[in-house]
Amino acid sequence: MVRRQPLFVAIRFHLAGGTNLGPESTLEEGVLALWMKALGLGLIIELHMDSTYALPVANRLHEHPESTVVIDHLAEAGFKNATPVEFANVMDLAAFDHVYMKLSGLDHFANDEPLYLSARPFTRRVIQEFGPDQLVWGSGTPRIVDAHMLEFSEADRMKVKGDNLTRLLAYPSIR
Image 1: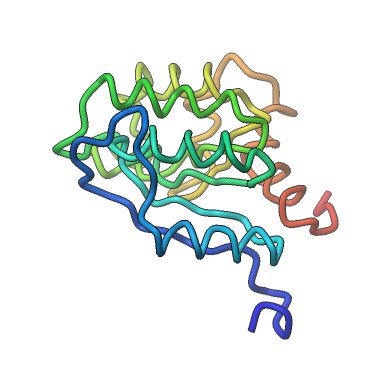
Image 2 (image 1 turned 90 degrees about the vertical axis):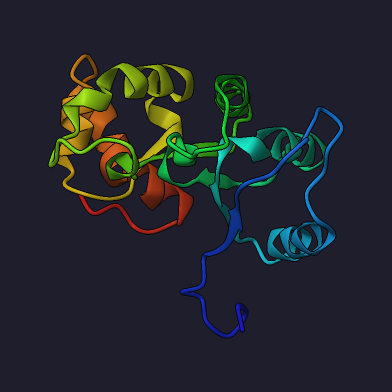
């Protein structure tokens, strides 16, 4: 299907609520098999995950650093079972060149829409770790990017608002 339809660009995994996922843990066998198939097809791996899965994802990325991964919704920072240590493990994923964090899902843990300014202390840390080259915007108004990246240049904010995804998807530039 992917070969016949070039609009398929990613495969999305939903990983949540893991327990006892320590430094040696791996992803489930079915996820591993699909991950490898996706790599063979040149697909982006989109992870709708919570931070409990950061270590198994890191282990997979150590084995396959060529994987292009987009972590959705700030790794569900407000997930009930997640711990601060586990979220620190998510931040460590920024060390992989082809891992991107989606600046989205702020409404999952903040309620001051539309810009969710109450989340700025948190997003500032995520933005610091991933940087404008490894961030993509994903939901709500694009003004969220401006509001949470005040100290960055317009060019850096444009990377997050669409230029990074344009590059990842190999689309022609829209500007």
